[in-house]
Amino acid sequence: MPPPPDTTGHVPLPPGGPVAMPSPPQSPAAHDPAGAIIAVLLIGPAGAGKTSVAKYWADHRRVPTAHISLDDVREWVRSGFADPQSGWNDHSEAQYRLARRTCGFAARNFLANGISCILDDAVFPDRPVVGLGGWKRHVGPGLLPVVLLPGLDIVLERNAERSGNRRLTDEEVARIHGRMAGWYGSGLPIIDNSQLGIPETARILGDVLARSIASPPQW
Image (cartoon, rainbow, N blue to C red; front, top):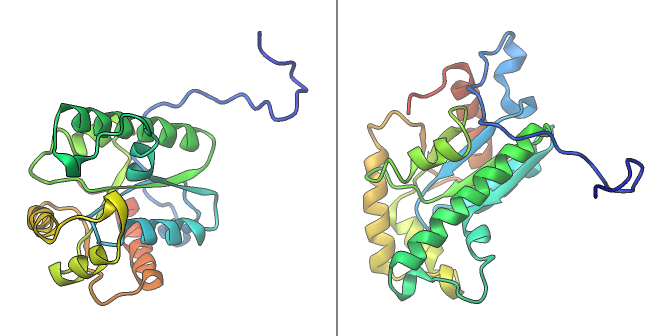
């Protein structure tokens, strides 16, 4: 039985449908995505700074914005967590897919309630059906992808500062970074933040998104 309408905290949620393509801006002010309700996918290798940049960008917007981290959602599984570092297998693959679907569902619900979102994930260009194709199915064609890709020396340095199951071997970091280079020539916007701090990277991300709203990338 649903709670009575005046129950504190009971907020009926509208159904979350796929995110539509953003409408072209109608005025110069609309080119600034700071006030737009949008869904962003920030792509990059481990150590690229995706989570830090996504949090900062979300924290400094003029409209309500949520940050949804794939790794955070994946680690909701406690007992039975399939750590890919222990060997990639059907269980770890299934948990990644489940986390992506969960993130997509959360994104649609946030957007349906007027809250923008930014998701971060290490999506590989050589697995388009699982990567971008999966996110398009889970969120919708209006999702705006941006690649964050600093130099290998930078991601190695940042990875070395990590701990726990998020710290990878140097060999794995180099392998992932090499695969990420396939995004060059893909048509997606790429930010090289090798020499940029988090605030500056977030500002450039805002500029890139303004252009993406005006002319959505084909992906």
